[in-house]
Image 1 (cartoon, rainbow, N blue to C red):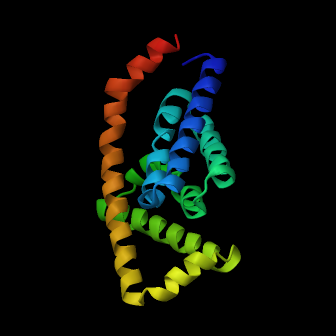
Image 2: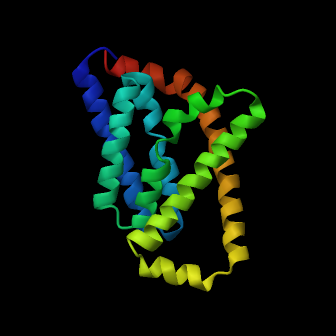
Amino acid sequence: MRKKSAQVALCGVLAGLAAALMALGGILPAATYCAPLLASLVLIPAREECGAKAAWLLYVAAALLSLFLCADKEAAVLFLALGYYPLVHKALEAVKPRALVIVCKLALFNIAVCAVYALLLFVLVSEALRAEFHETTRIMQLVLLAAGNLVFLLYDLVLRRLEPLYRVRLQPVLRKLFR
């Protein structure tokens, strides 16, 4: 894409799509963790078609829209903490050796998740979340964190497979559309 107006239009549509996906997180109770992952996928076309700077601006816009419009604040804060992952994914893949890549990715995920829940519990003081944390045992919380790590690794695998698929299937369509 060479035209700035086409890039702005694409990023605007993608920001709206990300906000709509995040709003679904408030409607469907099980989507608290799925909505941020799905919404972050809209950053792939923005990065490929408009560049990294526009993709980062799209992420900021989508995160702010989610914080203001999304009924599920837990999902919105998770998107704020981890929604940028498709933008840093390539940089993390370049780390050598390969075992260090996985350690870095899991460290990023765990730091972000712990920061989110510390923010929700102690700064924003979500009483519903605080009551939920008191009801669950520490072992169950650790099991949930381990399951989150597994889901994050699966998300990373999906991202690695989805980026080439985007370049082959969707990128030619978008390039024809915005010619």
